[in-house]
Image (cartoon, rainbow, N blue to C red; front, side):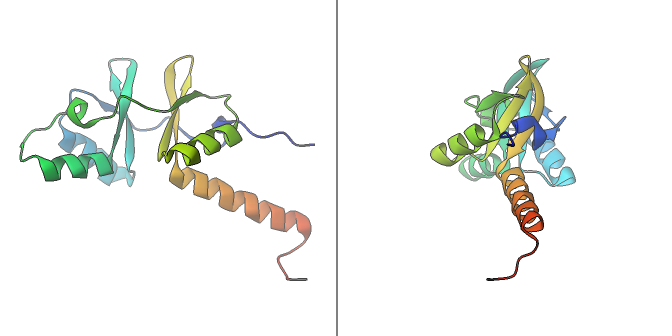
Length: 140
């Protein structure tokens, strides 16, 4: 019998991150360059939170400030799990609380990120594997 995999099997390892004291424009540049919508935020070697493209857009619409800092826009209230956390537990909490992302740590240090996009990709692969095992996708 197979066991439920840990989050480390489907997370994006070694994610891009941004320092809390940088201008929001730097975070936007990183997101645009790499086609991502979430960035873990660090303060030195410590995890400080997460910043999302949605948060940046909202804040920029509300404020006419020229130079916003990442720490002014980031959320410090993040869902953070260890590498060994079971995937079903993470997915359940994401769905229950309408979360877009999860920060994954190893011994308290940033190790990965898991977003709703990763969840969809993992589920698509799971479905493909089920079809392969059953011998096809034809209707009965």
